[in-house]
Length: 507
Ligand code: NAI
Image 1 (cartoon, rainbow, N blue to C red):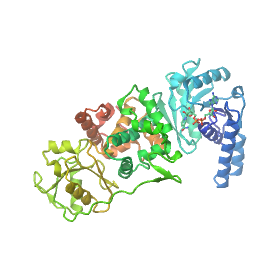
Image 2: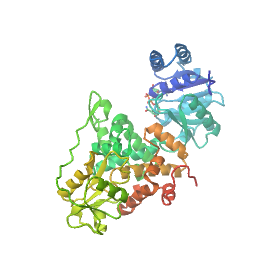
Image 3: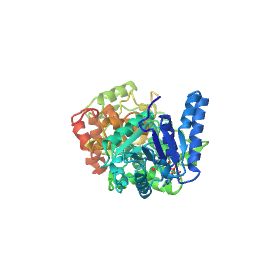
Image 4: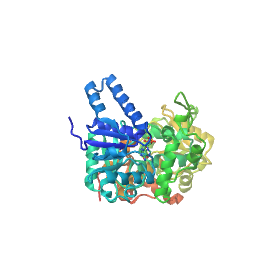
């Protein structure tokens, strides 16, 4: 039997989080006591955890003797003073600075001087929570995710005065609980809620700019990058009463950094009660818990395709030429397109209108394709028109790229398409987390894959698509549109400019 790092653990606040943490701690071998100011809450939490264990036993995943020993280690107390002997107390009470800080002052009076105090806060500063303590060095953040038993990552956060040994002990205990600890500095949103800002906020920006509707944005990001859920499906699942306040909190705590600016779309939907799946209506409508998604428009039928000319400046040009050839198009090889040709451009970060002007192409016959992601690995192609693109040219391009059955989305002209903007924003925010030294690049990757369920860490994603390409998207977005939200982080700029891997390169 494992000897737990903390044999006596107190959990305060027996809600959704407290009960999950109590379950894991008891499973790790600690004796756990739950306390809540609501008289019936601790007992309700205890019986909820007991029934979880019973279910696991029924499924054959736990032995009866194991369940009996877990149960014998999870108790409740009616007064805070009964936690006096605990070596570790974790609070998961209401998310209010005054309530948590008061509680820690009381605990400090009660517990032994070498006891560890931990907060499950998701948005408050650990340094601020410890400001009134005599021994702030004994307090750290221990941030779990919901549902605790399934989300197998925990952020261990050091306040400015926290002892390194306290974080070491909590990390060791997290491992005994079967979770992966990641170390974070005390900064707004810590790792996961900070790194997670790119996906939803940039997607909301695209919808608010009318580039594509939310269902199209979801389809593109799932099919092109492999996200399990689109950003709008994810917001529906998390619910806007949880996710919108997180967006606001991180934005304000970073003194209105434009990169994290929340959207009026979610503010209005929150006010109107369109919270998401749990109320049956969010971005999607739900019937029996299933999102009602309208089918996509079919690709147009075009009998006579025009010849195709591919810009010499297209991203992944060789690949694009081969693709167009394999799809059966006649390719023009002249220095400029003939008067009949469809002109294909594939910019990184520029919009199609700008490219047509700069390359002196007829905008009426110019269509763009997003080539950031290798065509062989993407399950969807994304085209963009400009305001002058003729309907026959738009339809010809759509029909051509749908010829082998791969789905095609046609979006409105915007610098950076959908995938380029969202991916570049995710990679840029992740790079800034590294630049600020909030955590190590490896912990960042772990936290994002386990805490947000992304198909890979943000730095690995940047590597896959090419640090130079990501940097080019940001650089063009920033310079052409003068938008500070796309200012590349120095950490990314240093690596991207010389095409270095974003992982395992320190300087
Ligand atoms: P909850 O509302 O489900 O449970 C909070 C419990 O604390 C309630 O039973 C309440 O009676 C009790 N409580 C309130 N003030 C107390 C006090 N002064 N002393 C003792 N008990 C008190 O809340 P939930 O969702 O479990 O959240 C708890 C903490 O965990 C918050 O700080 C929250 O920000 C954080 N958190 C929540 C996540 C989530 O998805 N729900 C994820 C990660 C962190």
